[in-house]
Image (cartoon, rainbow, N blue to C red; front, side, top):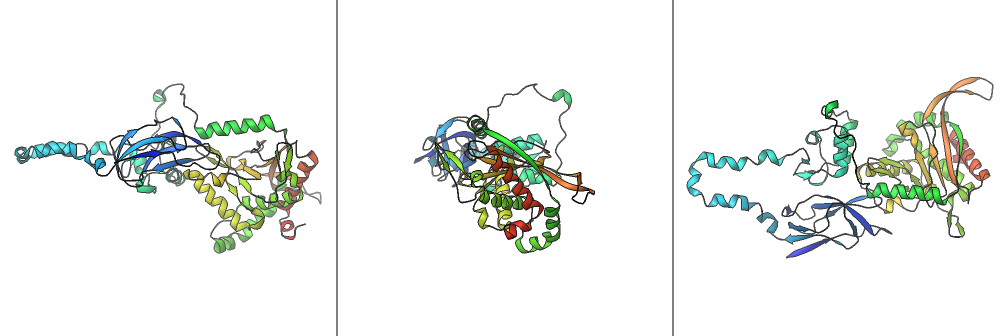
Amino acid sequence: MSTEIKVPQLGESVSEATVAKWLKKPGEAVALDEPLVELETDKVTLEVNSPAAGSLSEIIAEEGADVEVGAILAVLAEGAAGSAAAPKKDAPKKEEPKKAETPKAAAPAAAPAPAAAPAASLGAGYPLAPSVRRLVDEHHLDPNTIPATGKNGRLTKGDVLKYVASGGEGVVAPSVPDRGPREERVKMTRLRRSIAARLKEAQNTAAMLTTFNEVDMTSVMNARKQYQDAFVKKNGIKLGFMSFFTKACVTALKELPAVNGAIEGDEIVYKNYYDIGVAVGTPTGLVVPVVRDCDLKDLAAIEADISGYGMKARDGKLTMAEMTGGTFTISNGGTYGSMMSTPILNSPQSAVLGMHNITQRAMVMPDGSIQARPMMYLALSYDHRIIDGREAVTFLVRVKQCLEDPARMLYDV
């Protein structure tokens, strides 16, 4: 009995994907629920698992092919067919009982062992996913030395990132004479193509401007220092900067609803909910998971959501539902050392806040003294079709006030 492996539902408004990597070859045995192929959509990479045990008899859609929901990817031969392929190599040995007396005849059976553990495979012999292979090559690592925590012993991107962060040493980088070709052409991933199209669309559609301000981070840093231990003890998660910025933005959005709105046709849609997108950089590109109902959540709940999304993003496990429907976005280029930037709108949203790195700068205080203060530049890019300059500047000033005096958010003043 054979079963057709088809492209599953990919999420709302997503009807097409690209075959990124086949994890099995025709004729190979397949276990129930074992990953067969990786599909790449505009925003996420997902695995298609086997609905039954058997063997992969035929691959219909090759790597790189664009496929629609419901399209046939491969044909699976159910039952014992998958395991029948392996005994064929041993079958001739059953016809050689006379040679069984010779010890040397058994030696070839062990010969394939060294080939069963190539550098591109781990654990049960699964090949590395493209994103994992890129990380391994980038850091010159031996994948067989990295602890794997994925399903059935597969190595995940999270495993590699954790290994690198813990100080894992890579193999010796190739010498200059062996640096390879001067150029390499690689087809853009579907995620990268989607990012490029959306960013260009935002530039072409919106009347985009950026306004800047700076914020003294002393109060926020003192609050984190004073309450960090108690916060961790109570909530099991660290108190970061993002929750403060998220709450500050919600306060400002409530006062300036146009910044939380969007243009649809010839109408302006004012949104009375606050779903904040938090831009996260991954090895495959920028993704923006959305923290829902931030006006109803405290700092701990927001930090927990952001932390969870960060881990999912690194492992490529974010779902489409987790990255759609945001009303406003925060992008933290400061994590990469950025001092100043002009973030691009996350269409159809009308504004995005850019955070940057914190540096000690000499500031003239109200009493005339000069002090070294931890300062951060803020940038608000906005769609001038819906947001006036006065509203944009006022929004950024309000965010600055909330961060320099967090008690304002508590008392709503």
